[in-house]
Picture 1 (cartoon, rainbow, N blue to C red):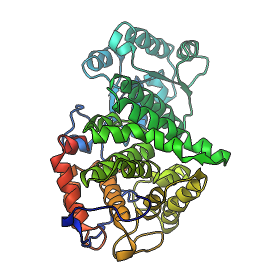
Picture 2 (spheres, rainbow, N blue to C red):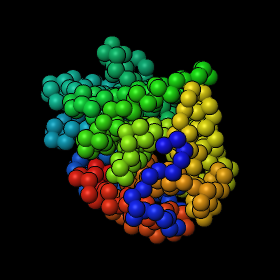
Picture 3 (tube, rainbow, N blue to C red):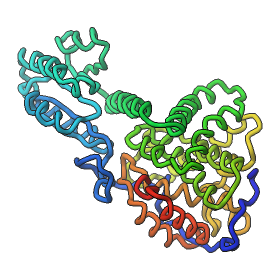
Picture 4 (spheres, helix red, strand yellow):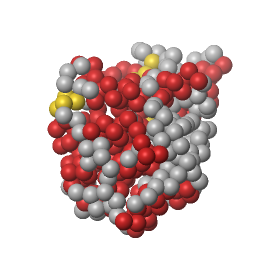
Length: 421
């Protein structure tokens, strides 16, 4: 599969049209958030998958922290340590934030008891083995406070006010990702290797871009080999479930696209070499988004024309990166170049249409849209797989309906694939 047409079964010999309902990996929507269990259901998909706890005596701080975090996480807020501990022992969060501001601080007052109250809560959390393992982030207005000194001595993350929302989100995201990736150690092979190798190579892409040095394609191919093995062995559900909650959206979306694209090819009977191209192409298809400004990539609401132009530039940026990759297969490059093209010619960047789009490009477009619809973002809820497929069925003029029907059948036939999506 080097940019040529993928081999279809006889029943998939002709492609119908389909249209984009304005939804996809580059389309923003309103934030939906809430609280609930970790069981994945249609209702649960409306909620961020990661629970964060906030313990703050100051009402203003509780409100500010909830507002800063709730678009990306399920936020449980507590005014005191006793209530927090009683609750959190029954519903463990992934990260706990502790603010040492006193209630009077909102009115300009100051209380010497508040920092000790926060610090006492920190020490009490350590009495419970399950809570002691949860990472803590300290928040203080005084770099010399008891909480600050304790956190520095324990090499724990500490944020001193005023705190930028971006710094808060970055600190929490790093801790969330550490927890998610730590859980991968409990997976069997090849699922564990599929996750660990792909995230390692993905995290290194930025350094590769900055260095501007040629990168051997073998680096990426080898990172995707365990993923191909998991797909061929029918064990890819754990891979999809493993990235749930990971806070690097571009990586999560890319790995999901790589997994579903590889499984799509496997269901069509493609050989292992082609599955490797599909997996690698899926993993790398959006690396250009790593250089898109965060405020554009995660903007709630509609993008301006200028912002939309910046967003669309992720395709040429991805291709520029691929220019640094030695011996990259044509199929990998084609997936990156054409996954936003549409059968009616209204896609980008080249406006290709009809026969100009081979099966590989059509498969990539289907999987990318499905991945985007079922991804959870800061600005939108994850759509249930069945609802996403129903919506895609109405995209006449944009997607190949014969391949889309096969993709739907593939997901329905795969045990657990729809649940893991």
